[in-house]
Image (cartoon, rainbow, N blue to C red; front, side, top):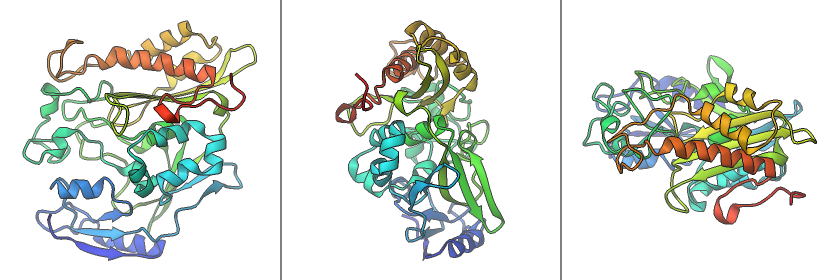
Length: 362
């Protein structure tokens, strides 16, 4: 492991001053800036694998940013340093945001959720197995070296929004639900504060796949605000993976419907995970659902529209290929249909022991 400086801060102003000072002050062989550290469940792995080389770590684990609860404006405040496990089990989340809870519980393991923070979940690297292997080229790790996944083994990789420079997918489950719920990320620096709509927080790769988010090096996430949720009775987080637990999704879907008594759709939210460099949301597809009956035929049409620009990558572009990811396109379409059917029926998730229905649903 490359040597690094370690700083511990106890207040937000101390943290902002520290990261402002460290930003851009890297030594040869290190990343260009210091890194914030709290749970460390992703970053420490990458440091051990010789993928990340921060010249300094700023320990923010003691900052007072772990609160969860409603604010006067009606939004649910999720502190950046609240643990994923505590977020999933908070009474307000369990009662009013079952899809978010289901997404968090579908991710990683109980031990990791006990350590991982909400802010860290947002900032985990969009990555793939090539990114983890320091012995092979990777534009995300070393810009300009190439993307071996584009014509290699790409079963887990993107089918939407990718570029020749990178086809990695964002791994978070929690972020897919937050994208569907119109969350807003609140950040702070010595320059002031700003609010970033969740759908704009993560980036598509373009020609800069090394940049995962729009967060500036001197900015700190303080909390995520989630607006009031009219979708709780009819919201679903569906995760499709190659093994039953502790695995990234091949495709995931956060689907939420607001229904009239006659089963017509009043409004809808729909986000996909593990199909792009960021959680994928298409407001045009959501608009297609409005005013339509909550039926399988409606959902099939929307799924086809949502995947209209999907592209396969990797080895032979055949559904039976063991290298390419062509199979993910029909898989994603079927997952969207199934998730919308589950949402209409009030089924919150498909993930094993965590599967449950909302109270009052048959």
